[in-house]
Length: 476
Image 1 (cartoon, helix red, strand yellow):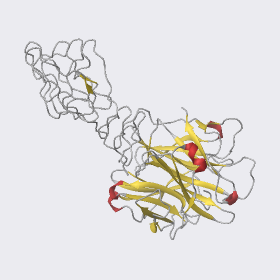
Image 2 (cartoon, one colour; image 1 turned 180 degrees about the horizontal axis):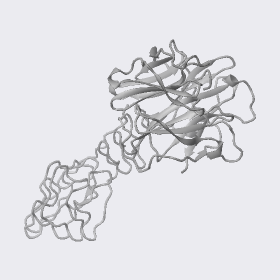
Image 3 (cartoon, helix red, strand yellow; image 1 turned 60 degrees about the horizontal axis):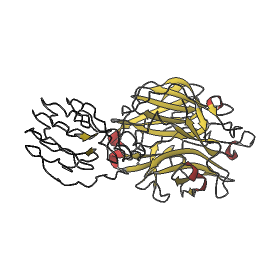
Image 4 (cartoon, helix red, strand yellow; image 1 turned 180 degrees about the vertical axis):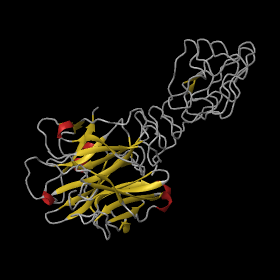
């Protein structure tokens, strides 16, 4: 937001434990029956057929896994014994945690996958030989371990990789070094969604300065709004992008202009940071971000003004934390980006001693800073004061370090529109965060920008420009 606008996470983890089927026949010393069922496995794969003892071969100590059952923990598998000829091992099952895998033994010839191959998302087995001619299975519907890759179709782990077809990780603490298969982005190309995803309701003129998190399967968006006379703030929730068009837009009782929304894990609080409160920057707290009436407003985030008397003073704040500190970044409409910090144990609270860390003509306002998953790097975006508006990208290896300009982040030059471009401005917004916590983590494999755009032919004073929410998806 220019001169008067500012920058506008409960664990959803259902424990996917399938029923444990009992033992239907035990392994015998001579030609015994297959063990069907066996002990269970949380999120493990199916044990098909159990282990067949032929000629006195030893059976598994610790048990094979069954569909949906519990992995045997600490049990040794086929310790010193040869595996049964033709017997089937776990199909894609998780390895035994802490157990020795086939110490000195060979795997079944012609059987399905042995203890050498871990399930998708599970911990791989150590030391096992793959079965000759066997097939690799995949755990389906299980819950992945904390921090691991998820089972196909299962719930995502806390802070882990998103499930294929499953739910996003919710409420977990992530770090800039978390797992991801995409590198830190140094070039950007985008495709627009095809026009505004929503129109202002309630007779309002514009919607702008968006902050967006995904929580409990819902997009939660807080934003600035302007009616015919004044600025205020509003929120809406919706399940997917098409539903944004009919989502209820609720005005807040307190103007939280240019907000930043995130879940502060250490104290289990939702934070809404904003400008135009009782001090330079303020914050509100809540336990239910989907409710516009749940907030406690008016807490001081910053009372100092390091801008030296710029036309706006401090503007467009964002807050981001690593494992040690929380940082406040903001602009001044004066080509500067400012930063302050405090120990994470002191947050939420009042920042002090902000200093300029960037002095560049392209750093006008709408500062956002993100941890880029799996890269150990941080991405900053700043809005330029050009005509039209656009964003520039910056990078750093630490939140307290030096940010170096990368180049254009989003502008008319690298956005593809369907048909005629509905907007010339790519202005104040937020990268969509599927992890809503204080680390402000984004996935470089799946980047979307919820931004404000407007008709290129609309000509009016800044406050009354008819901004609408638009959506960009990164394509390179």
